Length: 579
Image (cartoon, rainbow, N blue to C red; front, side, top):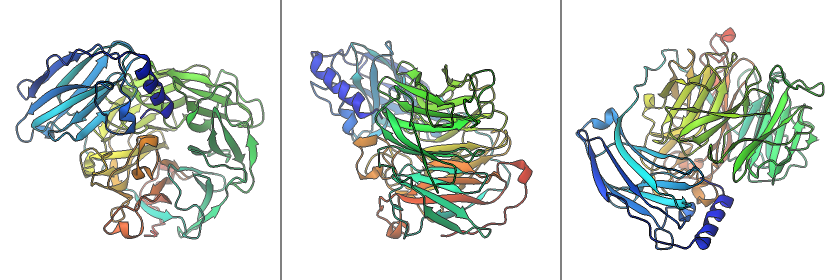
């Protein structure tokens, strides 16, 4: 979902542009079937903008126009096992923006694609029936659009990995810890030198340590001058042990860093000049060879990236995060939608920032020269989703891109050439019947090992509809063969993390935005996987509901199975589970 400033811009245009009726869809309707699989239509031009979708389902009126296409689908039984219904709209000018909604026969929204992407794409089961394809001119600029509905084959997924499944212990923060139930969109990091895990959410920074038996100790180590903002973020550099805590503050952030796992904190500039106003991320790692390197004894680069109305930008620090250079654009809205995922740095210094909508695909913005220049590289199999994708990086540079596809499914692809090409793209949630996911998070270890965490539900449909009845669990999928096969496990099979809807529409959501925008994943020095998440279903909700709409600070820590480092390939002995 776009930010509030973008919505305000579109509302302003409604008053500036004089409204005139657009040409209705031509034809007004049509049918796709197993014998006639594609139909196209066009409508426009549009002058008046409609930004009502920012506040929920769009409203159509003379002043806020829509265009409806009546679509009929006719398919035989079982057709959806191997096929999907793909609906797509596109337009000529990349500066314009249209949104796509698909309604069932009762008028309820089944699915939508309301990003800044061109084209907008929706994937649905090809169930026989009547549908309305509704197109909203969010920022039309006098443009027309072309729509296509087609029945397409599903890509075949390989068999799941036969490696024994990883197991996990789940560790909620103690009830006596202040801030334990205000942990939406958490970040997590591990200092490989001390073994301490740091968990950040809201105003709080928690340090979590695990003893030999697997028992967890939580301590509040929040920075003394931290302030609450809409966007808290944390990053721990594994090898140096330095942890950064950032709170968004306009065009930069209030940032501090610690070399003592939170026992003491030092101030940082916070970000680069001309940084964006929203959705910041902090990351770091080695400098790429051949370019300007560190200016102090601290060996690694630190990156601060954030998005603005028309672009996103990253700034680099060469003195360990004390100061930052100017922010450099990594893409504009002509390339990608504004919001992006977390910045990651590969062992060779290549920098990646993932994005959920770039020219109709999921993609990564890539820099190979320490943040001086950037290019956008898309996975052509993917389609835009509703939550930020995530990148995990292998020891020799393999890139694992985990994402929420436009059909709601959990897909992940692999690149061995810094995103220039992608392979082994597959649905890892299909093993357990997962139909919708949120908050993908990926981490790499050895070059052929990675883990992909997400919240998932086996209930199909529009998971952002307040009437949605799905039950959500935490899932983790692991590969040990470079993404050729994955093994997915339900980490919380008897303990839901949410009941009902999960809204990813930002400030336009109701009380079902308790989990906010993301969660995080990391590994310790032995390659053990740890996931930092917020539990939205506690107390009476666990057994039967209703949902508690909580955001309880929780860590899932691997307790059995192979880790992401082959040198430690032996059974993990810690199998303690706290609930």
